[in-house]
Length: 321
Ligand code: ADP
Ligand code: F6P
Image (cartoon, rainbow, N blue to C red; front, side, top):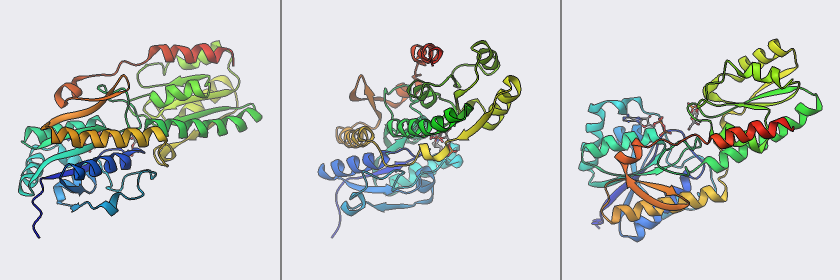
């Protein structure tokens, strides 16, 4: 029997984020309800270039909402930066009768989505990254799980660190964004934090000297340098016992929190609604807690102001601790 339903496709791209599976589930279920055939693209833009697609069925989204990572797989696809690859992918979508692609990822993935749209393929982006660094959206799927995982790990490191009166330098994820470091800086009462948005690498040793730092927690976002090197610098400059810890992948994996499941599911379903209402170059956003949408070009032009108040708050509370 031929399947005459209009076709859409879903991919996850860039760094995975807990809650991506909830977004796949929300998008698939709502699109099916609205009468679409839904294809899953494996491994992000790599899968699109290789034609690695399959028809999603109800069974594929059963029991996935509580699982971290992404059932579709993801990738960082250098090849897709090339115009020839973008055209090839768009031609392939046309050949497969794909009317629109739902792209779940960070701002890099949105930039790739825009290239597909430039070549005539409908796209709807869903913000998902543990970094919280997408200008157009208050919230990005995955941040809540990641920041809670980091906070719990830092609590544990802090217990043993305090028992030995030593300094722990803890490296958290965030190559270009310091939101995990900033939130944990407050939630774990770090003595100081280093984030890429502030250029304080040269002055932080002076700061630690000025507060007569002897022990406690220093949280470093990945983009500011390696925990091991920073720990060595502190040990040599202040002559205190210092240990380095890298949290790494344990922040990005794990079962999503209720917030990430809810936002994932809601934004996924909303993306299907957008396609159904004829939107073809848009992204789903959260603004003041409400799910909404905007054109992808506008979304990509936006930057998120760094919350200086929270940065200052960390400095204030660390003085009493
Ligand atoms: P994230 O989506 O988490 O920000 P990346 O920055 O790694 O992750 O981007 C994910 C993928 O999006 C890249 O590997 C690449 O395939 C695609 N991409 C990123 N920037 C562009 C661009 N300017 N043009 C085309 N594709 C891009
Ligand atoms: O997905 C975002 C992110 O986790 C950043 O926080 C981090 O800097 C980067 O990806 C690390 O990615 P990978 O180690 O997979 O290259």
